[in-house]
Image (cartoon, rainbow, N blue to C red):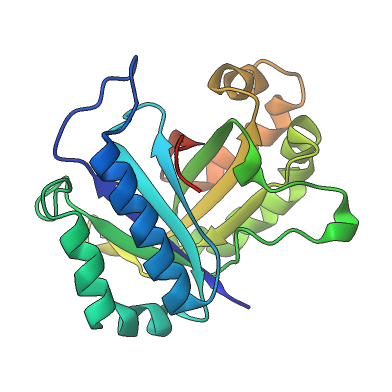
Length: 224
């Protein structure tokens, strides 16, 4: 099964939340980058813009393995890709380009399920759950117990999650990260979930995490 790449591209220029339209030069570079990535991996790639901070872009795509992607990162094709963004992307520092992988194919939907990809939604919830290594099994057990609550709220959009392959450290200890994607009609539609009665059970997963981060993504107009 393929794994998923998540690359975050922080633009050098600020993009206003009230006017998130990207410069044409950035659109052109993203279009070319998508072609390069898909040719190298043989799988689909999609590019999104964060709603809360429109200057953050997300490349999400599939590879046969993390090793296959890492080989590409050393290839001339990737150097060409990076050169496309040399004037538009921050590459270093706390707000620099980051790349990592999930152990799950986040795009594929079983046609017989009657569901649609979360990535077709107007607003895509990108939830990062930070879990201590010793609570990984307990967390996923609880998540599977309450997952249906979120699925009922987001139907017919699929809820899909995966574990981050590359581990981070927090307070000197390695920690796990569970990333969850789900689709909504809007950010407000997602926020309204917390006001429903079933959410009282769903929020039990909070007892198994050290912290979490919630952001929302949207498709970029003008990209194929």
